[in-house]
Each structure stands twice: as C-alpha cells, then as structure tokens.
Amino acid sequence: MEAFRVHKGLVAPMDRENVDTDAIIPKQFLKSIKRTGFGPNLFDEWRYLDQPGQPGVPESQRKPNPDFVLNQPRYKGASILLARKNFGCGSSREHAPWAIQQYGFRALIAPSFADIFFNNCFKNGLLPIVLPEHEVAKLFDEVYAFVGYELTIDLERQVVVKPDGTELPFDVQPFRKYCLLNGLDDIGLTLRHADKIKAYEAERLASKPWLNNSIL
Image 1 (cartoon, rainbow, N blue to C red):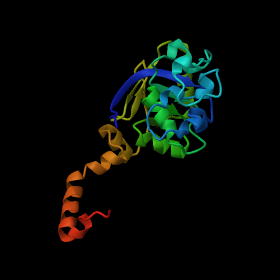
Image 2 (tube, one colour):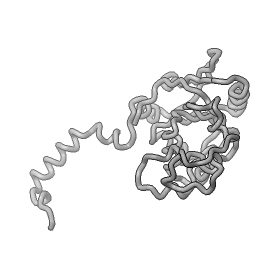
Image 3 (cartoon, rainbow, N blue to C red):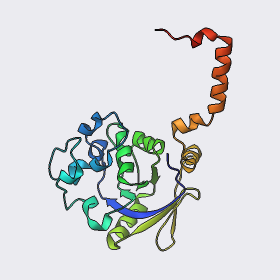
Image 4 (cartoon, rainbow, N blue to C red):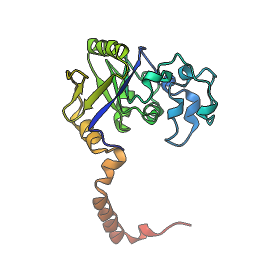
C-alpha cells in the first residue's frame, strides 16, 4: 500500500448527498475476482451515456456524459474528491474504495461518511477526511469559483491547507494514521512480524515433525 504523508492535488466536486456504493461502482462490475481494473467504471452510470455498462468493455468504446463532473476538462487529473454528507452509504462492497483509488484519487473530503465505507478507505490507502458541513460548503464554493483549485493535505499535521494558507484541522485515529503514514494494510501489518512467524513455524515443526508430512 502506498504511504500517505503530504499530498497536493486538484479537487473535483461531487455535489450530491447520500452517494451510495452502487453508484460508486455498480453491481455488475463486482464479478471480477481481481482487485484491479475498476477505475474506468467509477460512477459508471453517471459517467457514461451508453447504459448499462458491462465489464470488459474498453473505455475507448464508451460514450462519456459531457455533463458529469469527472468528464469536464477542468477536473481532469483530480486526486481529491470533495463530497456531501453520508458519502459511501449502501452495501459494504470493498470495490468502492478500490474504484476511487484506481481512478486516481488519494483523499476524500465530506461532512460524513458511511461507517463501513469509511473503514474500507483506510484499509486501501485512501484518506477520508471529515470536516464540518459549513467548511465543506465553503470548499465547494471555492472549487466552483476557481479553475485549477488545489488543496494540500498534511496527514502528519492533520490539516487541510487551502490555497490562501488557511489550515483546516481534521481528526484521525492514531492507529489509522500510523498505517497510512507507513503504507501498511492488514497484510503489511502482519508481515512486520515475518521473522517471528518463521521462527514459530520452525519450532513447531521441530517439536511436531509429523505436521510436515503431506497427504496425497
């Protein structure tokens, strides 16, 4: 998992409340057993006019919706998604943060997130930031007013820095912060103890050698 320390990026506004995980990545794209390739289908039903979208269809063969925010040239390359309250509600599919991350986003800012989605973001290297609703509303106004609007997110200091230098503090649990700063997902956390695991396995086989026998 890629570590998150300081990130500066273009902001894209998702100006809808209660965006659910089926809107983030529709159910037909959950058939894949892989954890990759979901970025082109992020917000598929809103992003494309040819519906319903189907797995395996190249993006070059789709018909983009020119009115959808992520298809607008001014937001091309955005890596911070600004959203309204209750973002990520609905089913608990982990494919939702996969799709958001694989599209190119590193952080999300909203007044609130659905609990399971919020937890899944941290497990997949995304930083979901909760800010007061009035601050989020101001950010929406500024994003719309200024083309190329960027924010800097400093995880270590726990602040969002606006272009004028104003700092907006945010909370993050210490353990989640530690994992993001060090690029550690659940597997990475376990592998920190690889030497101890190997030593335990060696000791176990030495004391119970019959466990090393395979059954044909």
